[in-house]
Length: 231
Image 1 (tube, rainbow, N blue to C red):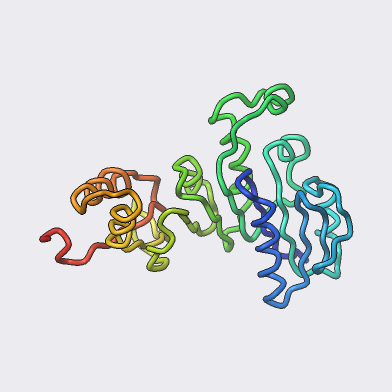
Image 2: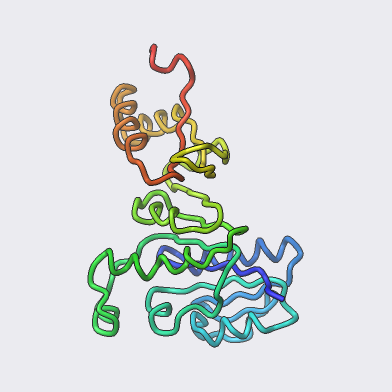
């Protein structure tokens, strides 16, 4: 049968993230395989020290009956060169939208951000209906991949994670969708402390740059206390 697969794409510390996710899955009691830039691991033991972000290494995890789950790191180049070793995954994580480089341009003519999006979206396209995509909301182009996901979507943001109140299901754009709910007052306080904004400047920033930045039906929801606007 199919074992749960967690796929990770992007070039913003994907190897460290893959190792952390594999460790967490291991702690849940599953015998976990990991294929990442640092090597190939099976149940916490490294069996190969070379870069394992390739089709063959991933396939070794998927056909190994001694494993209960697999965490697989990939990159734009590996997707274009070989594709993914799995057709569907339980969780697809996109850390960021990478920039192109001379090798991608020469081999695959990936020259523009739109070209790169068509590659990285693959990680979201393969998420199962009962699975989830985890997307970096700090980058609107990454958060915009939410509409391509067959499963649920979890958005995260580095700058304001401490303001997350939790997930919620809401009715938006004629569909029932999952969103993250943020405490707007914590975001305001962060902007004031970190960036030296006044309360009014922070409110205006949130109103125009966060609340006004629609990223599709899975856009985060900001909640204010009833008396905030009366200050």
